[in-house]
Amino acid sequence: MKPFTYARATTVDDAVAALQQHRDAKFLGGVTNLIDLMKMGVEQPAHLIDVTRLPLTAIEEHRGGVRIGALATNRDLAAHALIRQRYPVLSEALLAGASPQLRNSATTGGNLLQSTRCYYFYDPSYQECNKRVPGSGCAAMAGYNRIHAILGASDKCIATHPSDMAMALDAVIQVKGPKGERSIPIGDFFRLPGDTPQINTNLGPGELITAVDLPPLPWATRSTYLKVRDRNSYAFALVSVAAVLEIEGDTIRQARLALGGVAHKPWRVPEAEQSLIGKKAGTDAYLAAAEIVIRGAKPYPHNGFKVELARRSIVRALSTVAQMMA
Image (cartoon, rainbow, N blue to C red; front, top):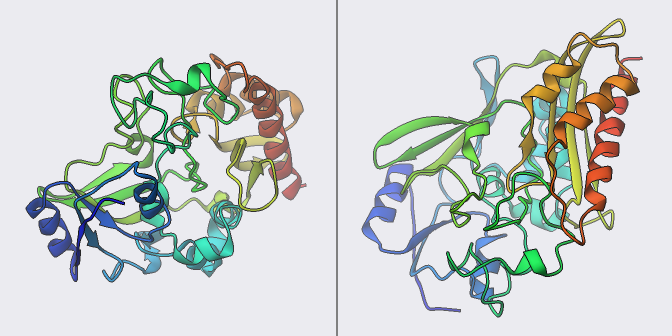
């Protein structure tokens, strides 16, 4: 590991200022991702700014919804009464992620900022990785790409985003940086790889996530999170689905649908959600929505199974929610 210096921030303003004062510095939060990357030689910051003591752990009512502090742990968030009662899909997603030990440390902000998942990115012995070295190529395309993206990828990168934090709840990310505070809708927070796969999010230089706001969604109580993986504990999703439905009688009135494990960012297709509204709840409507979600999928030699797996997972997740209201 490359030598580095360390400082602990006591306020959000101090943390933001410290990042401006040090060249090649990074914020240090729950230490479940950055430290691993540093040990492997993927990340080599010269200075770490510890933000773990900042007062950003609250989970509380906010404008009819819930505000989650960026340093709230996955454990505390999953167990919180407001989340379990109003947004059970988020609690389920968190409990399906990592191990109890990691959930004790991992934070809300850190979860959103995880690096994309790729064997070749995590192993610097592979020279071809546009995320580590822009312009060097993508070893995964011609390599073993079983866990890789089938949607939204580019010829520069086919890695997937590993976060289990559901995007189906229209969350808004609150950040603070050198230019002040701003809000970023979660749909605008993550980036597809395009020609710049080394940039994962639309955070500006020196910006720190301070909170995540969940809007009031009374019908989000009827939701589920489905995670399909190689083993039932401590494994990233091959395909995951967060599904939220409002059904009156047998007619779908509202729908939210987001997938993980299939793209460089959590994958949401508003057109698929709109296709469900006004339809009779049932397999036909769910299959039609699934076809819209996977439209344009581009599988690679080892991950073609993900197309059908995504289709079936969408139908299963939507069916599970509908059965809650039967």
